[in-house]
Length: 89
Image 1: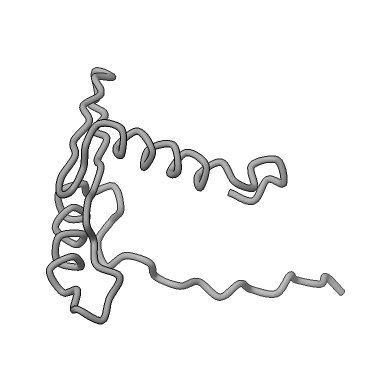
Image 2: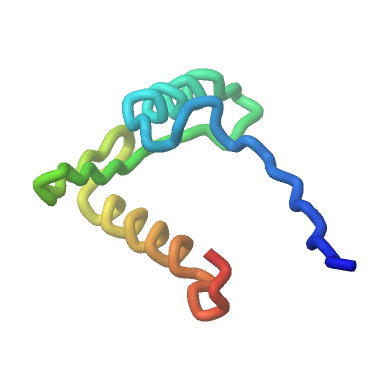
């Protein structure tokens, strides 16, 4: 008899396709607007835009200077690459 692997539980992370950039930006803005005083409120946001032609644009909003933006981007790189050696991404 063939044993079949157990099926994994799949959770929907987005109600829109994550490749729909405008929809995901709207969702992020809605999330920020819904924050209350009890939340760890957003103070700044950094965005990196990549065009089909490979042009890169960097945007910063909120309480952000160039050095803080660099720190935020470095922290994001660390979070994205954390666990790469263990093939966890």
